[in-house]
Length: 180
Image 1: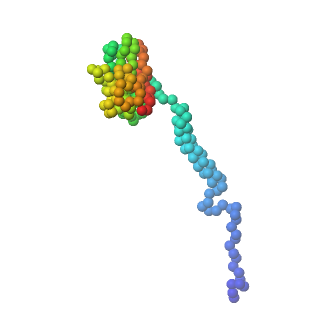
Image 2: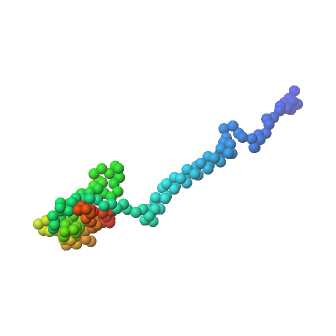
Image 3: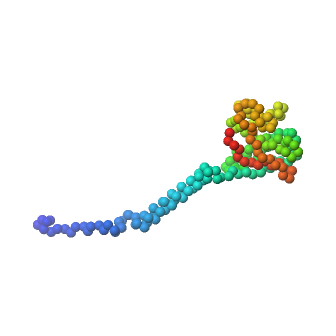
């Protein structure tokens, strides 16, 4: 007897609509696809929105009035280094959150605050009281007492902070300075 005389039953044809073992069901696949798209869109928004706001200039710099001392602490005609905290310190900034300004007492209630950064390359400037000049030790930039350029490579006068006197206290409006 041969196999041709007694054929064995063949395996049934697979049902194309039947779920296969180990395959995702269509509803589960759809859910995972939507979840992936949603998480991808959320990630893109977390990165894209702040970037676009920065590029469009929508983020406003922080400006705060910082108290630097009483009026009596600054003799008229003097130029004194005052230190204060940066307008937007980060929790991990440490001592780099501190900045300074040269405060000049002009008349009774008139003060001028100059940035300590040279307008050439940002080196800290020093006040030379005998010469009545500001001096940048990095490249020899010299500024007059009113902050204008006397000589050297600085392209513009010293940056100024707005200053006010409130209740006998001198306050400086801290804000980001222009990049040199």
